[in-house]
Image 1 (cartoon, rainbow, N blue to C red):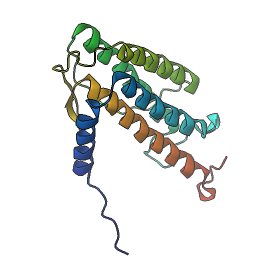
Image 2 (image 1 turned 135 degrees about the vertical axis):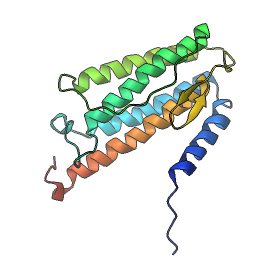
Image 3 (image 1 turned 90 degrees about the vertical axis):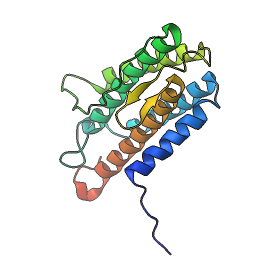
Length: 185
């Protein structure tokens, strides 16, 4: 059996961009919210598999811990919750996104981050559910890798981003539970 070729990053970006462009306009605002909510639930389920005592443990040196991933997802969700409604409701031009990776400060707890994440998702979903589906689609702002997107594409990007990090959390949980890691729970 032939070995499958691994998709390059450029191919992955092109595939995701194609998905965002085609699917964002086929879905109603309610369907966009539903897709994001499903991804959010998968993220929460993956996160629940990591005990609190292991939240700050990275599987390997230089990799993210689960709380680092949670901080990142919460940060991007907060950006989405401010930019997308501002575009929909007021036609405001958001700044381009700077997707910066940082470690979670010790004073932040998973419960605080989860509460912030829930609040951001709720604000975003409420605004999108009230949106005119055609409102301000001429306004775009950029992601460093995925380029310029309008609010409907950003909603689906939030889904893709959340699912990607749900898989990352699952991989962290799997790695930390391996007997040879010495970190089993």
